[in-house]
Length: 148
Image 1 (tube, rainbow, N blue to C red):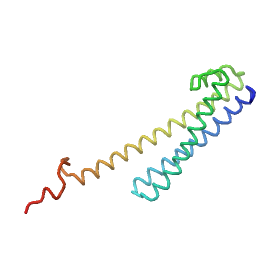
Image 2: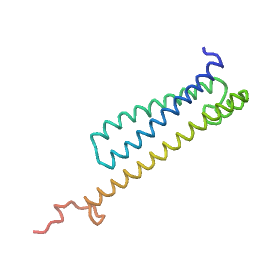
Image 3: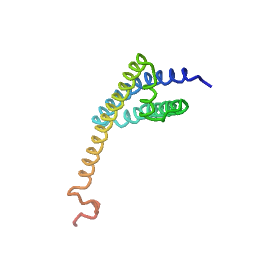
Image 4: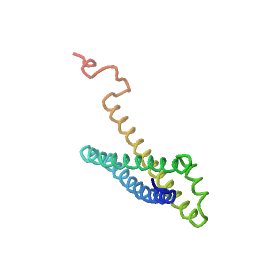
């Protein structure tokens, strides 16, 4: 069973690692957008596997942080993290606050890029739908509309 000090050190280490991982995710999300714009389905398929793996790793590490916070007696969320920081000596609290805020900013930036990618995907799907179903009427296929 790790000591409280070891758990806090592991949480801080995890925040640093997650910040770097989210920076990597943001780069991957930007690359994903490029691949979508180029309609590179093969590249996108390979890319998405890598991106999904990174996301799974980030979720796993967030769950570990939650467990460590809870084992220290704090809520397993952002308010629990803030409570932990508030209990730290001032010098350490300042450093960890900066690390934590940096992580939150990096997460938010990644979410914004992901949302932009989602909007691009929806726009592409709408264009395809309009090409396949002109006039917005998709009840009929092209064969049924032919005249003899």
